[in-house]
Amino acid sequence: MSISGIKGFNDILPGDVEKWHFIETVARQVFQCNGFSEIRLPILEKTELFSRSIGDTTDIVEKEMYSFTDKGENRVTMRPEGTASVIRAFIEHKLYALDSVNKLYYMGPMFRYERPQKGRYRQFHQIGAEVLGVSDPKIDAQLLTMVKSFFDELGITEPKLEINSLGCSKCRPAYREVLKDFLREKLPLLCEDCNRRFETNPLRALDCKIPGCKEATANAPAMVEHLCLECEEHFTAVQGYLQVAGTSYSINSKMVRGLDYYTRTTFELVTGLLGAQSAVAAGGRYDGLVSELGGPELPGIGFAMGVERVALLLSEREFKRSCDLFIVTHGEKAQEKAFALMCQLQTKGVSVELDYESKSLKSQMRRADKLSARFTLIIGEEELEKGKGQLKSMANGEQQEVILDVEAIKSLLA
Ligand code: HAM
Image (cartoon, rainbow, N blue to C red; front, side, top):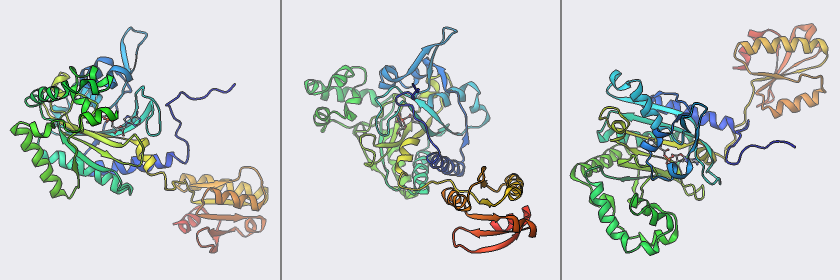
């Protein structure tokens, strides 16, 4: 019996991988223009890193982490997100001592034991970016503008930017009490999860997807109406800079986010095209996280996008791999010559294909078509004798003679 993969863990097959390359290339370009450097982080971290940063009462930490005890009796977790690891590395390697502003990006697999469905998997991939050391609202607006321009570069205009402010350690506790007062009498109408989280994490009731909870919290007081002066000024300034940058947005005062480390600005890029999984990218400010994890008092802000979700939005487009040249041969000697030319051209950066077994001309041409070859080069016995082959452009059918020499062929493929 054959062995299948694990539920929620996907293979990314040729054909799709080209789409992923495109997403990664555009992300690298856009991030580099904005001053970000790549950081590569391990997949396994101490469990404590996530419980302390994401929060003990979050769904991720309560129910979704892949945690186990390793052979050395250490509690470890396969990372459910990238931010905590970035901060851990930032503190461990004292990156703050090298520069007062650190802009870092990362790409890679994350793991959450969620119920798999379209756009939601147990191993999924994030591309994320974090800025450490800047509290100025200009950076919030720059980051949001960068995310939007990433989607523009991909040619996806669909995800809409929604922003909110979750206040700070000064104003959020008071708001929590106001919200709890509002929710207390609605408890019989709220779902089991919202009841359970009433004391520990009442804000989650605001973005609960259960219809009864949505209805009961429709008129709930909003954090944006209870911000302290500094948070209010910060949020107003973020919006001002977004307008200056020409980045369109709307305020969603019900956005809470599923991770506890957020302060002030939070945001999501949402789409209606992916069913229940509406957030393609999300993030926010986390001004207390670096010190919470044992580092200096430094502010931070970042976001991560789900690559599978971005790829789903690109699904309409063709991302077929193509080759520069397919060499069609007739006869054993021609095959030998073609093999030599292929090897030499490949070392010069030209992508070349041929049929490894001798097949009819017709079947070789079919394969050239299948591989989307830009050119074909036909070599038979006659061509070998003359030292010249027939080079054909597959785009317009034009044919010309070419000397069977690597440089001569290469110059005509441009
Ligand atoms: P998050 O909202 O948990 O935030 O995840 C960010 C994005 O990852 C989501 O918007 C979604 O596109 C994708 N995603 C999350 N879970 C899954 C899943 N099970 N399957 C497929 N895609 C998924 C964070 O992870 C924060 N670390 C973002 C951040 C960075 N905040 C500040 N800096």
